[in-house]
Amino acid sequence: MTETVQGTARVVSGGKLPFANVMRSLQKQYDHIIEEKRMAADLLFMSTYMAAITTAGVTRPEIFGYTSERSEYVPTRYFGKVEHYVKRWNYSYAEGLKIVAEKAKNPTLKSLMNRYANAIESGVPDEDFLERELETVRSVYRNNLEQGMEMLKKWGDAYIAMLFSGALVALIIMLSVAIFSSDGIEGTLKSSYAIIIIIAFFGLVTMYRAVPEDRKTHGLPERCSREQAMIRRLERPMVIATLCSVPILFLIGASAGLIFILVGVALAPLGIIGFLDDGLIVARDKDFPTFIRSLGSVMGGKGIAITQAIYDIDRKSLDAICPLIDATYSKLNLGLNENMVWARFIGESGSNYIYKYMNIFRDAVALGGSPDRIGQIVHTSMLEQVLLREKRHMIAMGFVTLLVPMHAAMIAILMFLFSIMLTMSKAIIAVMETLGSNQAALSSTSSIGGMASGMNMFVNFPEGMMTTYVVIIITLLTISNILAGKIVYGGDRYITYLFTSILTIVSGLIYIIAPIVVGMFFNFPTFTGV
Image (cartoon, rainbow, N blue to C red; front, side):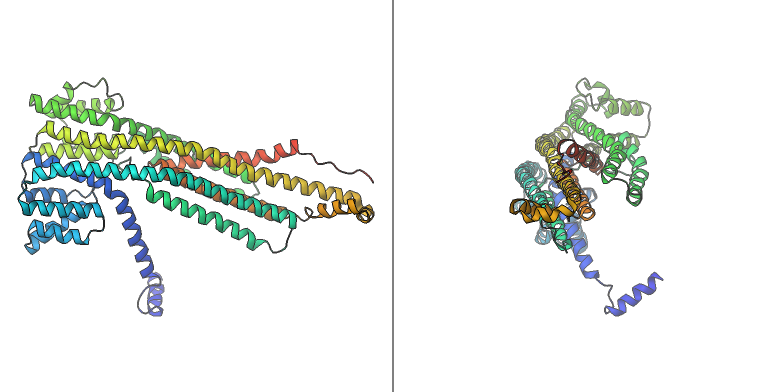
């Protein structure tokens, strides 16, 4: 059946599936954006790897061969192309680097490959060039991240201001509907939705492009930390159950505030576990540079194997990573397979940095490199990233600290104004019904007639339509702020559950509490007789 439909579609569209070119173009654009986001960090990983293996005295073909095999780094596929030109088409390495550099879109990668080609043509030894180039890449990485963080601060403030303006537009439209009670207001309400969506989309995309890439988790399918394993077991059933329960609750007439709260409570365990795992990863990443430098120094200074070196290093200051080190030493001491033991260490750490840098250290040592020099190289590169992560965390926490109260303020203003207008509308309707036949007499007097005319403005307030309008606006604001919090804070996808839990619970509580507070403090007088 599917093949028949595809065949018919191809015939109609001249042998191509409809929108195939558009989808392919969008996919290429998305892949390019993701590659650009990862390029800065992966260039540092790759440069560290190349500088580390040169301490083993490897030849130039081995440098390119080993580097092109590291598929976890984005830039290595470009070095794989250089290998292809050299081995299949008999180009020199300098020529291959220049050919690939012409096609590379990332300016930092293009510059690196051109400099490498010039160094080869000038006869500069690979080890000297890569050691100096590593310092250059670190400086460029630091500069790019600091620029990105400055842009993030500015665009974070701009996002909050723009979204608050969008919420203000929604308030004005709601107030206009209450005053004028015009027919055919669906188009006006849809324009309000469009304004908020456009503002949110522009702000989120701009912040995403400005924020530096910082992948905290390694994402290995076979092994992960204990917290990540819990999330993997709970994620699918809890998310599916939550998504299925929302339409059911709407169909049975449950309050939108209650639905918001139930969604937040249902996803709270995933968010809390993820937040704890994020904190543990950050702590382990802080300890790892010290651990790897000490390990390399002991191995190089005493000339001993890695198992004995682990036993000799001082672990008193490595609180976060010490349990993993102890477990690894116990397994190595029992004579278990070293590759499997270190794979488990990397997996249970849950950290992307530990995954990348531990493999760099072990590969370089296995090739015969100097452990103390390798440890120092790895330590310096990772410490650079850890310190920059701390600076970004300070900016992110400042934004999040402002985001949650701002979200609560927007929802509270919207709900309180809606509740006041709804209460006023019901009170005026009750007054008009009480006046009954006396309404004509009241209208004959100019002052009272003016009051009655003003009261008529709130009589036709469309409660059902405006309730739906308020719920949609709250939903759009909540989704936008959830994505903004995730983009700025970073971390794995489970951080999304944390912000979803916090912001939906806040939205739900305000949605339920606002009408109660308005009913307590805003009592409109009614006429018992005239």
